[in-house]
Image (cartoon, rainbow, N blue to C red; front, side, top):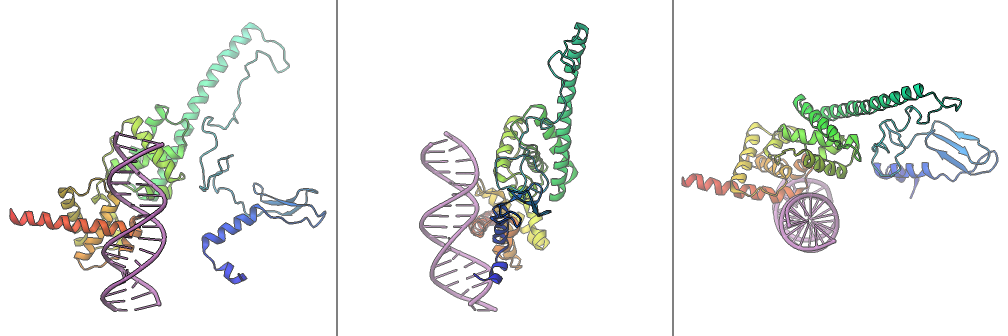
Length: 327
DNA sequence: ATGGTTTTTACTGCGTC
DNA sequence: GACGCGGTAAAAACCAT
C-alpha cells in the first residue's frame, strides 16, 4: 500500500494506527543506541538506557479529561475513577491511631482522650465531605448531559432527586458516579415524558451502554422507581422536527401509533422503533418521502426494523379504520 | 444458564431515475 | 450504475424464567 492510500484511509483506521505507533515505538536512541520508550503520561520519548529525552510534548493518548489509574484497560475514552471506595483516592490526611506524638513518645491520658475525639470528628467530616463532593460532581455531570440532550430543568431536578436517593441508600459503592448519574438522568427523562433513548444517553455519557443499562436497572429496582415504558409518540416530535416533517405528517405519525396501540401490536416492540416507523410511514402518507435510512439514522434504528414496523402500523391503521367505518 | 422474542447485520433481487 | 426498497437468514441483544 502506498503512502497516499494510507493517509486517505478511513478515520477510524488511521487513528488506530497512530495509537499503535505511539505505544510500541521500537526506535533507537541517537546517543547511546539503547531502546526508546514512550512515556505517555508525560508525553515524552525517553531512552531507557541513558535517559535522553528525544521528543517531549507528544500527544497524550490517554483519556482526555481524567487520568486516574484505571487499570481495567477498557476502550471507553473516559472511565470511572479506579477507586470509588475512597472519595479522595487516599490523598487526604488521617490522624494516626497510635497514641504517640511526633517523636514516638506516649501521650498523657488527657491527650489520648483529646485525640480520640479528634479522630471521631475527623472521620465524621471526612465522610460527610465525601458525600457532598460526590453529589457535587454528579450534579455537574447530570447538568452537562441534560444540556447536551436538551432536557428541561424539571428533568434535571428529578434526576438530582433520584441521585440523592441513590446516594442516601448507599447504592453508590461499587458503581461509578457517572454511571449512576447517567442512569438517574435516563430515568428522570422517561418519567418527565421526555425520554431519550439509551443510545442518545450513551452518546453524551462517560459510561458505556452496558454499564448504563446495568446501573439503570439496579437503581430502578433498589429505589423502586416507577418508570412506565416510554410512549413511542413521545419520540415523534423530536424525530419529525429533525427530519423536517410537516405538522400534518407529525400528527399522522401519532395517529398511526395510537391505532397500533389500540390494535395491540405494539407490546414488546421497541418504542424508538415504533416512533421511527410511524414517522416514516407518515412521510409516505403525506408524500414527503423520507427515506428509511434517513429516519433510521436520526432514530438510531436499523432500516429492517423500520420496514417491519411500518407495515404493521399501516395494517393496524387499516383495521382500526374499518372498525371506525363500521361503527 | 436457558429459551423465546426482538433487533441487527449482511446479502440479494427488483424497479427507477 | 447508484439508490431506495423489500425480503431473508443468521447473529446478537434482550428479557423472563
